Each structure stands twice: as C-alpha cells, then as structure tokens.
Length: 376
Ligand SMILES: Nc1ncnc2c1ncn2[C@@H]1O[C@H](COP(=O)(O)OP(=O)(O)OP(=O)(O)O)[C@@H](O)[C@H]1O
Ligand SMILES: [Mg+2]
Image 1 (cartoon, rainbow, N blue to C red):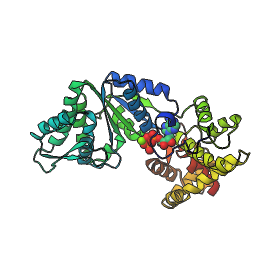
Image 2 (cartoon, rainbow, N blue to C red; image 1 turned 45 degrees about the vertical axis):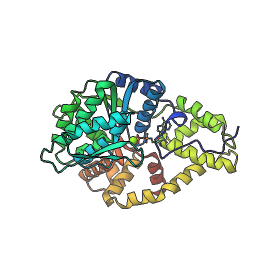
Image 3 (cartoon, rainbow, N blue to C red; image 1 turned 180 degrees about the horizontal axis):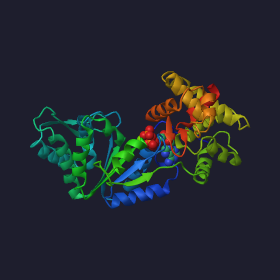
Image 4 (cartoon, rainbow, N blue to C red; image 1 turned 180 degrees about the vertical axis):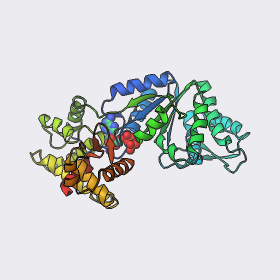
C-alpha cells in the first residue's frame, strides 16, 4: 500500500521503526543496565546516542523488565543548581503510583525545604528545592538519596545525557567528586553518562586524577553499517509514491558516509521529491543541493564567526584531507604565515566542535564539508 506519510525523521530522537539496527549496542547496553553497571556513551554529534538510549528504554518496557528508568537531559545546564533541578524534574518517572510518589517526596521534604509541583508536560509530580539554604550540599544529597531509596524496590537506570556540560559548572571539580561519592555507593543503579565532546569526557573518565576515573564501561557509537542500512531503507521506501531502484541504495549510504542524521535528512527530502517525480540519475545531487540550501544560513553564520586564520585553516584541512598540515608547501598554499598559527586555529576549531582529531583532522559535519567544497 502507498503511504503519504514521510517515514524519515531528522530532527528528533528516533525509536521503533524509525530506528535502524544497532542491535549489538542495544544488547550491550541492556546487559550493563541489568548488571547495574555504569556506562559512558560517546560519539560525534548526531550519531544516535539519545536515540539508542530511548530505544533501550523501549525494549525494557516491551520486555516488561522490572527496571525503573529516568532520563535527565543536561543540555544547557550551567550549574549544580540546574543539574539538581533537572534531576528532580524527572523523579516522577520512577514511580507509577502517585500516592507512593507523593509519600516518598514528602519524606524527603523533612530534610530539604522544597515545593512539590506538577510538570506541565508529563503531569508528573516534581520537587523544586529552596537553594538558599545554609547547607549547600543538601540538595544534591537529597536527590541522590532519593534515587537510592527508589532503587531498593527495583533496579534503576539513570541517564545523564550531555554529561560533558558538568565540566563547565562553577567548582566543577568539587561537584564531580561529590556526585561520584554517591554514585559509587548505588549498587542497584546503572548510571549512563552520554555526550559528544570526546576530549572532555575522556579527561573526566580516563584521567587518574579525576573523580570519574574508571567509573564506567565505555561504549563508542560508530556509523551504522551499510549492510544494515540497505534493508531498512528498502523497507521504508517500499511505501513511497515512486520507488527507489534497489541498486541505488548503497550509494545513498555512501553519499553521507553512513551518518545516521544526514541519511534520514537526505531520505526525508528524497521521499518528498518522489511524490512529484520518478527516480532519475540526477536526483541524489538535486536532493543534496536542497539540503545544502536548507543549511545555507546556519553555515554562513558559522563561517562569518570564524577569524581569517581559522577560515584559512579550515580550507587547509579540506585541501589536504586533514593530513600533513604543517609542511612549508601546505602553509604556502593556504597563505598562513607560521605553523604555530595552524596549531592555534586547529585547537580553536576542535573546541568549537567543527573539527575532530583522530589520526587526521576531520570536518565533523558531513554537510558542512560539502558546503565548504561548494563555497571555497
Ligand atoms: N539508529 C538509528 N537509525 C536511523 N536514524 C538514526 C538512528 N540514530 C539516530 N538517527 C538519526 O540521527 C538523528 C540524531 O539522533 P540523536 O539525537 O539520537 O543523536 P545524538 O547522538 O544524541 O545527537 P546529539 O549529539 O545532538 O545529542 C535522529 O534524528 C535520526 O535522524
Ligand atoms: Mg543526544
């Protein structure tokens, strides 16, 4: 049957039929959760960390496993106060009985001055602590003790997504240490720390002098394999108004180097095009141009905010495929005076998450790279 609904989604967390594969990662994560093991999930931006976590939550629900689930998005938090507020906002997810939830919350209020309210979206009860109290350590202790209290009834999984944000809090070191001191005592809770800024997370979890050293198993999310994408794409396109010939599906995955978000973005536009026209040879390129147009303003702003030397360095990376950037010839070609300027600019571009460094420097956003190729 032909469906009019576009099945591709590129701006939200995806689960169920919109979620392709990651079977192994789902199994690993679920196993860690069942064993109350902590996990650090790391990947480049928009590779599917949050979707994977939500998909595993879905699996837990479908398998009727007796595990309480709480998901805290730390994006945009700048202080311990924000962290605690977000945490308390999600507490309602851990108890389905309202009576019991209110009872447990009230008990916490014996120690911590706080207001009980209702979340306007989920309609679940929330706690808002009074932060002007004398004992500054009390709100975090209350939150973490509450989690421990819930974990006595059943195992829990607590997700802190965008965990790298805590690195920018005031007195981040002291906060990290206090948080860890609670986490390591919670034997029936699997904490999932997820984020995209590799250098920060690696420093947090892999440096001996940091609080979270060796506190979690690491799961690095890679691109989804072509062999897994093809049947999934074929399935989705089977309902399109005009079909995509099977032999062109591998090229779609290659065009965006297996990047989950851009493949969905591309397929979304392709699906819309197929409402008007049958498949023809120039179609993938037309769709790519539509995508670049859609991003034009965003990329223009990003470009305008770079210094002259950063722009030159980005072109240098592009021209040399991210390798051998310091040779006299490369510098001359890019019209950059010294190698130390390149070093500084590479550092700044990595901090802005425009570049990532592996064995070479890579422009993280595949479409930005294509935009730069068109415009430089
Ligand atoms: N398993 C998957 N199958 C198909 N598409 C996916 C999958 N995972 C992610 N995507 C696509 O990638 C997009 C980004 O996914 P998601 O928000 O989960 O990534 P993220 O790594 O958490 O991103 P961020 O770094 O911004 O937090 C989704 O909107 C979807 O289009
Ligand atoms: Mg995410």
